[in-house]
Amino acid sequence: MTQDICGFVPASCELLGLGEPTHLEPAFGRVRNELFPRLVERGFRSIALETDRVAALAVDDFVQHGTGSLDAAMREGFSHGFGDLDANRRLVAWMREYNQGRPAAERVAFHGFDAPMETTSAPSPRAYLEHARDYLALDLDIAGLAGEDGRWSRMEAVMDPAMSVGETPEAVRLRSIADDMLTALYARAPELIAATSRAEWHRAKTHLTAGLGLLRYHKQAAQRLEQAARISLLGGIRDALMAQNLLDIRGIEARRGPTLVFSHNRHLQRNICVIPMGNLELTWIGVGAILASLVDEQYAFIAGSLGRSEIIGLQEPDPDTYEGSLQSRIGTWGLVEAASVAAAGTRADAARQQAYFPLDRETIDGADAVLHITDASAAAPNP
Image (cartoon, rainbow, N blue to C red; front, side):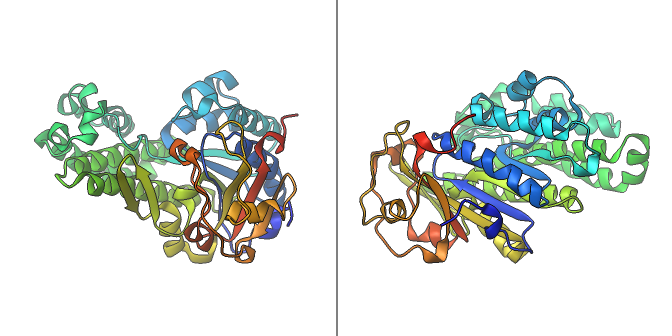
């Protein structure tokens, strides 16, 4: 057992996934904040969180260039309510302080790698496509084709295929326009970068790929399938978009250093995601499985594990569970090789219904190491 994360980063690693078993326990964000500076000392130059990639551009502008304020970055730069988390605010503040006075090559960058959506809802692609249109200086009536934003963003547009906008003639036309704009973005890259900058070109591409992702997501939402199959399909599309974003981020960051990726275990594990939702059991291929198949040893994954938590109502785990076996090996928190975790039972806690997922064999087999927090109230307390 150790608290030195650098011992779990192979020389070939360019994407290090650090997972958490639930988004509701802030101790994982606090431990992440303690580990990230150590990785920066080792050469890491970026972090990617499970938040909207386009929105996160505002955070990166703040941490790298001081654009705006910390309050604005937290308010505008996060999705899923993650801007309200104290650990995220402390991370952004630390990154801004670290970057001040440093040359661009040595600054740490902030990225989101999620698509601009929730599992059960997705906004209109209009604003994202309009950003790319304006950058390309094209005369296209995106708003006229997209129509009212509300008809895309309502939950029924994703959950009920009869209410979906994704296969309407206008949506089909928008997908064709977006594909053409992406081709033009590359074809005109020398001209566009000379007139603006490489950073602005990447910003336009980020908006455009987000808009394309939304169009593809809404197209899948229109499929008339059995509900578990439909939502599983949508989950798989979202994770595929996440993986594409991470590969794109690595293209941007490749010359500067590796990237720490912080997200839920279910996204980052190398094995298939299995997630219960009500009376449905959803399954799809997640980000970690996609990355592992494409970049091999360049991807490493540390699964998050939790013993006790007052916030989500977790009591001391039974000793015959994975978490129980780790409680006896680790102090407040620590890291162990996944291969050293012996087979045990899967914890059965009511907190799983609050998006907490205990360790199981599939998660451990899909990980290189496990970060276990024995008591969330004592782990990496705020200074």
